[in-house]
Amino acid sequence: MRRHFLLRRTFARVALKAARWRTAGEVPQRGILVGAPHTSNWDWVLTLLLGWDSGVRIRLLVKQSFFKGPVGVLMRATGAVELDRSNPGATIKALLADAADDESFLLGIAAEGTRSKVDYWKSGFYRISQQTGIPVTLAYLDRPSRTVGWGPTFALTGDVRADMDRIRAFYADKTGIRPELTTEPRLREEDRPTTP
Image (cartoon, rainbow, N blue to C red; front, side, top):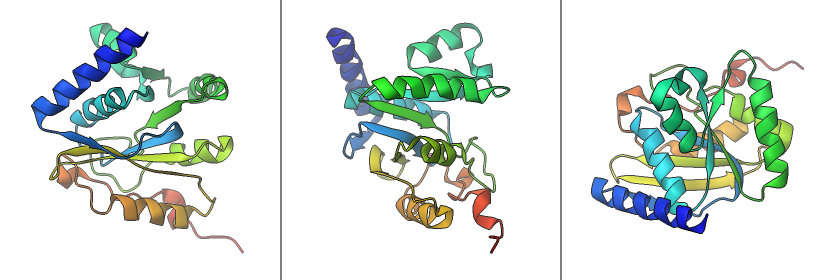
């Protein structure tokens, strides 16, 4: 196991150096991992290398269609978890059972949900964090500085707008690989009228 860890770390460091990217930030131990901006398939590769370089395993939720053929073998080998969108609760329950016994637990979710520009982020990360008490960890990549890194880890307050303001402030100066496809961190819930 130790040898496997060292091989991954060495590979990640060589690959990042060859690509002229660097890592930054304090390595989290536990969190619902949100990675942004998500504008390219390279985002997943860079986040995977960040995890390997940092010595942590990211359980990345990926839609079921990516697990067909040889690509599926590669996805599973790199820690991706197949998400059946017709029954997502079962997958998430199994992962959260692992979280109860695992001191180091990072569940990666692409909150933007797509590499295309959309109006809203998906709120799954927010709901899972609220339901489980597991804090949110913000990860990022920034093309101009060629940095992929760990941001803050914090508990959500339940005030959706205030929590998202904090997330927006963090990502405000981060630029994705294809900046024209960036979606502002905003949940549909923020725009719903509050009931007195």
